[in-house]
Length: 417
Image 1 (cartoon, rainbow, N blue to C red):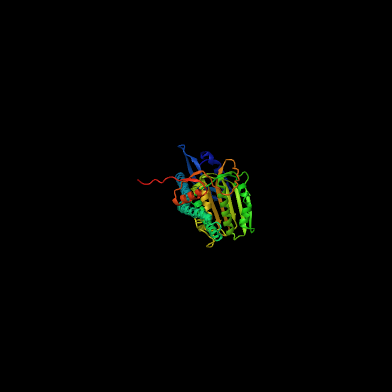
Image 2 (image 1 turned 90 degrees about the horizontal axis):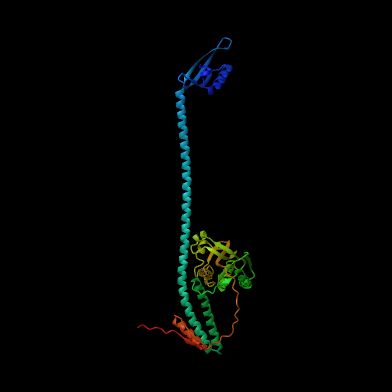
């Protein structure tokens, strides 16, 4: 075996300790260490020494070999490095595959989300286009219908003077006028849906305005319906037609009462709301901005998604035949859209319904209501210019004004040629 001085300094202690342990145990000595060679290089040697014992069992001598295994160990080290490299490559590939799988899943989820969002947007756009087409058609029909009613109403009112004192004729005339008034209300609702009804908006504090409707609501709904009203602090003003706000709330309240079969809880909420760009993207007809929100909730039967898609369509009704025209929610929809607002309905079967109306915020001061005291209808002697494209309506207006004593002028109709 090589002397201690020829062994690499880092391996000397280990060689000595392992030799001492083998001698003490009288066992085969197996060890590896680096040994200095004459050319100045260190080589790795494997040592294997077998003890030879005398008759008394003591070690008499050692027989062994000192084998240069440098190339073997270098080859093993190279193989180990190669195996480590392969292992790193495998780990890297597994990690890359996992990252790719996660990326694919993320992309798939994003694609699905974008497709779902696009479908939702397309459905909302189709619904808006359908309602717009309904509005144009309904508004045109209602306008012509309203003109016909004006002709009928005007002639009936003129006829009332000729029949004065004839109770039987006056009673029949009153019935006819009542029918005309019902038709006029129907036409008004159709015009509201078609956004062709003249609005008279003003700046109102909707909480104070609706507070003044408390008695009207309770009389309309009956004692079996519990009404709760919640108003957020610092409520903004809004710019809307008070009459149409009143009609919209009454329509929603009566619909809610019907959905609860006349008994349940009606909740009215008012608060400030901000509709942002993200909300507007999924509701393409909405302009981002600040709104005053009016919500009406009930504890009624609720509606399925299929029904929800139709509730704002004119003449659609869930009530039994003869119990409703199906124009209440249509009127609400038309009024809100005409006012530059937004309406959203939430409902689940057996969980009730909530309708939220968003009306644009106004930063102006609230308009004060001026009470006008009406009196008997009297005529005058002034000259009135009547401009109306419908000949029959123009004729009845001219006759009515003339009957009241006014001088009436109408534009001459230019004849061809």
